[in-house]
Image (tube, rainbow, N blue to C red):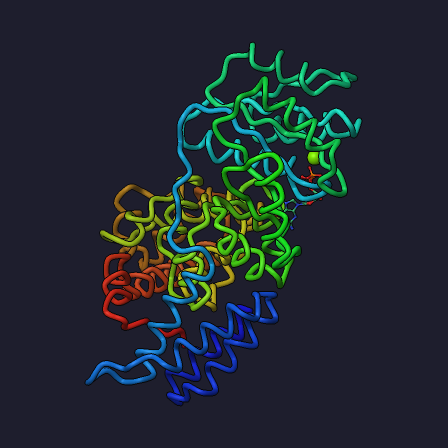
Length: 423
Ligand code: GDP
Ligand code: MG
C-alpha cells in the first residue's frame, strides 16, 4: 500500500496526471483490503470535486486525497488517557494480547504510572510464564497465581496489589463463542474496567470491522489495538473497517519488540505514508532513549552531541528506522551500525578529548592533538581520524534535518494544501 500511494503522489506532482494517480490509489487501497465501496466513493468524490480558481488541479487533488485518506483511516487521534485505571484486554487466540499487555504497560510506565500486569489467561499453562517474562523484561509489576484455573480469582487477588494501572491479559478462543463471552463478563464484573480494549491483528483486513462490531455487541468495548501492522499488507483494511464501524483505534503494534507500539493517529499515519517527516514520532522515540531532539535540531552541533547520539544509537538500535521517518533514506552507515567494539573505541577517544576540543572540533586538525588523543585512548591515529570523519558526516546529516524544517512549518504546509512531496 505504502509504495503505491507514494507513487500516486509522485504521478500527481511530476506528471499532474490525476486520472492515473487515482487509479494507483484505488489499486493500493484495494490491495490493502480496504472496502471497495469506500474506495469507489473516494474516487468519485475526488473526480467530482470543484477546483478553486488559481489552484493547480494536481495540488488540489493531493490535498483532497490526503484529507480523505485520513478520514477513511479513522480521522484524528483520540489520545489514550494517561491516568490510573483498570484495563481489560480481549481478543481471539494469537491476536497479540499478551505482547500488547506488556507494550501498553511499558507505554504507560514511560508516562509516569505504576503498572501491574495481571495474568488472567488461565487456559494456556504457558501464558503465565510468557507474561511474567515480558513483565520482567519491561520492568513492570506482575501478578498471577500459577496453576489457578479461575481467572476471576486471579483478578480479585490482583486488585489487592498496589498499582496505578492494572492491565489484565485474558485467554482467547478461536472464535467469539458463548464460553468466551461468559468468561469475559465474569472477569469484568470484578474488575470493573475503565477501558476494555479489543486486540486485533492487522492481517484480518476489513473483517476486523465485523469482529470489532461483534465484540462491541456481545461484551462491549471502548476501542481497539491493531497489532502486527509490520507484517501485513492488510493494515489499511483493518484500520478503515474499524473506523467505519465507529470503533476508535487507540494504538498500533508494529513489531515484536516492546517499543514497537504507538498511539494511532490517522493524520500522522498518512503523513508518514506519503513521506512527510514525522517529527513527533522522532521526539517520542528520542524521549524514550534520551536523545534530545531539540538539542540535535537546534543550537550548535559539536562532538558532545555526536557522542550523545552514538550512545543513544547503541541503546536503541536501528536509528535508520527513525531517520527514515524523517524522509532520509541514505542513512550513513556509521549511524546504522554501532558495534560494541566500535563504541568502546569511540568512547575512549571521546574521553581523551579535552572539554575545549569537544566544543571546538575545528582545533582537532592539529596532528599533535590527534597523536595525544590516540595515545591517551589506547587507539590509533587512524581511529581518531575515523571518529572525526564520522562526526563530520553526522554534522552534515543534522544540517540536512534542520533544512527539512520544523513541525510547525509542516503543519502550515499541510493546512495550505502544499504537501511536501518526497523525492
Ligand atoms: P495472544 O495469544 O493474543 O496473547 O498473542 P501473543 O501476544 O502471544 O502474540 C502472538 C504472536 O504474535 C507472538 O509471536 C508475538 O510475538 C506476535 N506479535 C504480537 N504483536 C505483534 C506485532 O505487532 N508485530 C509482530 N510482527 N508480531 C507480533
Ligand atoms: Mg496470550
